[in-house]
Length: 367
Ligand code: IPM
Ligand code: MG
Image 1 (tube, rainbow, N blue to C red):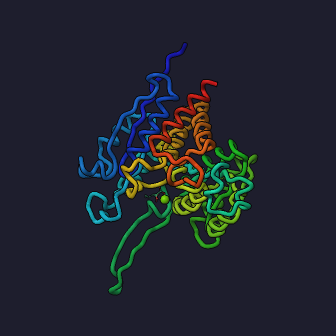
Image 2: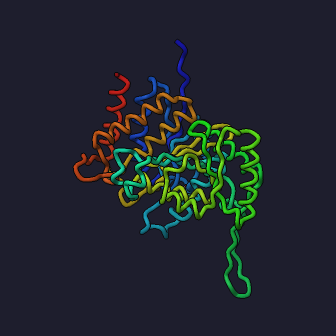
Image 3: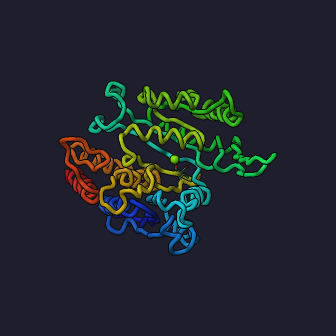
């Protein structure tokens, strides 16, 4: 029997509900891995790190990540009532954007699915979601207005602020390859989103994406959609989409719109990937400070993010789909955390949901 290589996972639970939901994901990983297959190394990030080091992303944490095979990330950010404190000032930007830049996470995967057992909590009419919703947003993560020049000044006695949106063709090409490959693995359809009727960055985006597609992915059916129309189509007819490719800023907005479809942010996992395949896995939701420490947060987004880690970083596809099936089983049997609860279902807390998913996992693997 070949020896199992230990995989080091940096665990950055962060603030708010981070700690409680990450705990459940670690539990699930320990269950699917062989004994000693995963080594978890904790490190501080966000407000938690600020208390200890006076910064949101300490060098020590970066070092732990660098020495790991993947990062399991919880959430960062403080309560609204404390937003004036230095501890929370720019906390998300200093932690999340800095990690993206540090590790070159160029593409962000945000899948949105409407589970058949949760159709009733999807805010859209049932006849709209009747055809099923299972889409993937691939968002560019290192360019655009996020990382262009930012400046403030006074001109003619007026305060002025400038944020520059910038893309070069290599940046677009890199994320386009990721999206085309993802489309090949799914139903082979890719919608590239832009604002090419107005923006130069979008015109370059569209042109480059088509060049990549024509040269290397003739099997993928590529279409373009303007971002304003895409926002509308996500609500009007989300079933039409398979993979959606978009720029950093547009992806930020569209992925939050898509996050409404499953019925709760607590169901939305995500993965951020570098060119070398290194990845950070985190729920799409934030730190949800209003429910932190109450044991009611939904751990599913974190658990599904861990499943994405298995598939993307460790090529453990079977284990990843076992976790997804265990989540579906827990939902099919009616277990619900508060955010996805509807009448007649069984209300459970964070830890209980983790336990139920673990027990479903054991049931499936024993079969
Ligand atoms: C996200 C978040 C971040 C972003 C913020 C917290 C910097 O909204 O991951 O979507 O804008 O990218
Ligand atoms: Mg966002």
